[in-house]
Length: 195
Image 1 (cartoon, one colour):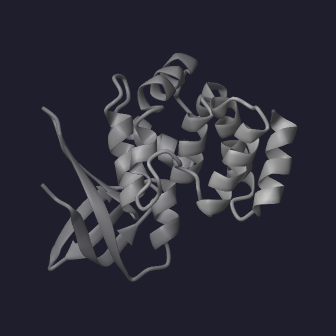
Image 2 (cartoon, rainbow, N blue to C red; image 1 turned 90 degrees about the horizontal axis):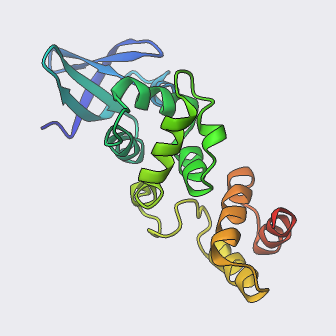
């Protein structure tokens, strides 16, 4: 129904923002990631996800489309509501979350307040093939490729050395999360330490 709301930031807290769009104040629930992005802005454009329940109509706002898409994927998982998804996105940036899902690190994901290990595992199982789709402008198979070509070259080198593609992908995902701007040689060297 709503794609985005743009206007003056009338009120801002780490939990919500009120955007004055033409004299109407819209209260949007936000993550800490979005709060950081608009913290010092007088005007903001927040991408919206609208949830209608029996007892409430709730607007969630996001600084980027990527964060909104991850939110939508998270709330699509049975047992994960809007507040839980927002807490996950407040704990991890979209890139970190994609890396956690790609590396299937349920233990790290369960560090989110109020999220148990079973729910974390469920999120990973259900989103492992979908989370990469939320990365706008990046290859569907490579959610973390900040320097796309370097990642692909490092992956090719590791598979030529005989490492299984899935293991190499997990190792590279972890390395890219730590050092997204590393050159090919550094990516390969650091991934080899993890394999």
